[in-house]
Image (cartoon, rainbow, N blue to C red; front, side, top):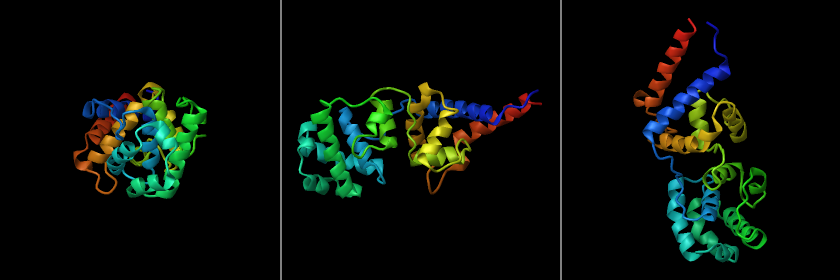
Length: 223
């Protein structure tokens, strides 16, 4: 039989990845806590070089002090700095958060853009957070290439670059658009539980076993 191309083999592996992670994590929930859409943008900005867990301890304090988009748009940057200091890079993060809220409130009437191009024009919003907004707020296809996504897809051989944008481009070649956002959320959960950065539990990895079974099946089909 005809041998499958490299892309087709990756697509088969991605199907296994999607199915296995769906069984492990039926609810594909965002790791960042939020109640309003603009707050997810702020949490995404705070998550740069910071754990989601720490962000989730800081955002309640921030939103208690500044409960509305307008209040943040008019906020004192030094006060915001003091609140978000545990997230690191607090000078630049505070400035970009306040500026972003000003643009959203005063220039956009609080309406969050629904394209990557427009989202990444907002102060402090990079491609990772823009994709997060595209998937969770606008429910459009989106691949969030965070550290978990890059690490795990590299380990699985589905991607070959540690550069977020290159990694995202590679994944778009094999990931079904309708599965993209949920898959990224499940990868984060999997990266915390099993495929961790320092001590991946490869010996008890259900994904490894499923992919090995798929690879064996593919080899048999080519015989």
